[in-house]
Structures are given as structure tokens and as C-alpha cells.
Image 1 (cartoon, rainbow, N blue to C red):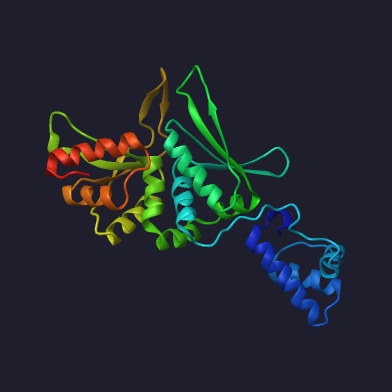
Image 2 (cartoon, rainbow, N blue to C red; image 1 turned 120 degrees about the horizontal axis):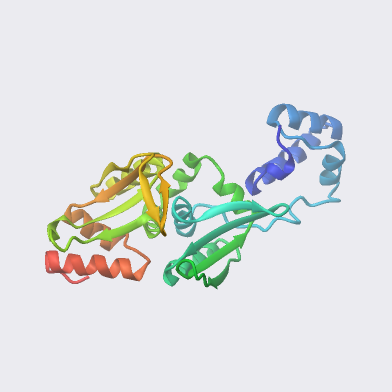
Length: 279
């Protein structure tokens, strides 16, 4: 059984429309509340139904509307969400979407995407003596929080409509360019993630764009790793999605690319040396 607080922007809109439809059919407030509970598994009181139907209360008064229609900006946000961004519920009913990164241009790109869908983001520069200083982008939005909390298959549907923007967001988060100084021809683009399903989906989008890639296990669960002098263990398998064929790397650079300047410059420099082309 769910409460009204568990509903996102779209579900709440649909519920309000359905309640008004039931009222027009002649159902009283108690009957409507019972029907909603039986059909949709949502608990709503008779008093709330009455206030909504009479226009005495607007359920959207405290909800900040964002544009959740498929768009390049929303696809980029989803890509970043499957990487470095996070969502959280803090204090009392405060829904947060946040990204902390070293690169300013990445933070600005995420901020611009959030602003484009109406999420009103804030940007701060955080100094930390124990690690690298970082840019923090944050937006408070229940609608966006509930949207991103959906099963990943729902988010994949939007990413399919704007594959380049989704992949740019994902690779901005998880991707890097590896250039081997001793074996120059073995250089490649790669992205790491614990979620194999996300990497397989990304691989499918790359294939749709005629970009060849392979997935492999990079680190098995239980493998030790030293981070800032402390030993930790990989909690599960860490997977790598690798783009290594020169033509595929070239196509990625031209059609997708990195928002992060240092990554894109490294990629362009390698391609220029490898193919004698200017990028």
C-alpha cells in the first residue's frame, strides 16, 4: 500500500485526473477513496478526495514541476545518474539530486541540463584537505527524484530516444581515455560500472551508432584495493566497457565526445597522431 507521498509528478497528475473522472461518473467521496485503494493500491482519505474535487486544495502546491518529457537534457541527466550523480531523501521530505566532480565543465554541463528541465540547480565549490576539491551541483526536486528512482528500464526508454546525449553523460561520469606510451596502438576509451545491465544497454546504443565495443570483468568481487592508504575490497564484480577499434574511437570522438576538456583533448591528441586527422 502506497501513500500520496510515494507518488511522483506524473502519477499524481494521473491520480487527480482519475479522481475527477470517477466523480463525474457519480461516485461519492468514500466510494472514490475505496476504488483508488482497490485498483491502484494507493491510500487516500475521503476528506482529501473531497478537498481535491471541490478545488479546496491543490496537491501540486508543494511540488516543483520539472519537464520530464523526453529531451536531450533529460537523457544527459539519466546518463550522469547511472554514473556519478546520486539521489537521496534527507531531513523531512527533502528530495535531492546531486553531483560532486573535479571538472568544472562537467559540473556546468550537468547544471545546464538540470536548469533546462526546470530543476533550479545550485553550484558550489567545496574545498577538502583530505581529497581533491570538487564542484557540487545540487537540485531539490521530488519530481526528478521519483522519476530517477523508477526501474532502470523506464529510464532506458528515454535514453533510446537521445542515445548520444545519454552516452555523453554516462562517459563523462564513468569514462576515461587510456593511452599506453609503450604500446601506442593499444590505446582505447573505457567506462567502468558495477551494473552489467547498464553497460550492456550502453553497448547496445554504441552498436546502434556503429561504434564497436566489448565488455569484460575488470575486477572480481572480493579483490583488494588501496584507496588513500586504506585497504578496501570490491563488493561485487566491476565491469569495463571498452572501445578500442580506431574507427570506433574516432566515431565516438566526433559524434559523442566528452564534455570534460582534459578527456576530450587527450582523445583528440591520440587520434590526430594515430590517423593524421585534425579534430
